[in-house]
Amino acid sequence: MAKMSAGDTVVAVKDIGGLLREHVPKGSKGVVTKASWGEYKVLFTIERWHGDKKVEVRVEPDEVA
Image (tube, rainbow, N blue to C red; front, side, top):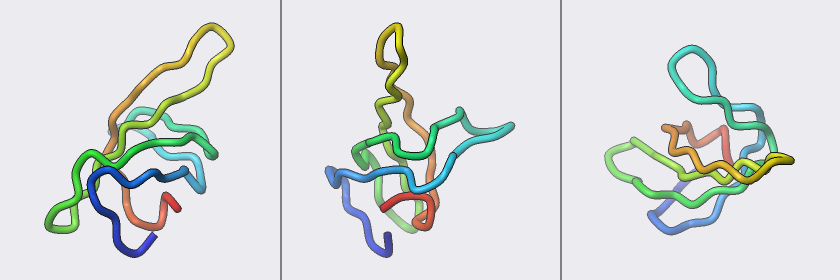
């Protein structure tokens, strides 16, 4: 996604995360919470069999659509 604004709804187009960011599976839906100066944060809802989990992570524009 080239340009994001706070409040936009996005979907992870690939698995996000690793050592420094919490894991977000591909297909997870989220809402942009911060979009300024090239820094983007998204609050994702991760669906799990025993209840949904919300995580906020920094994303790159090519990780979401």
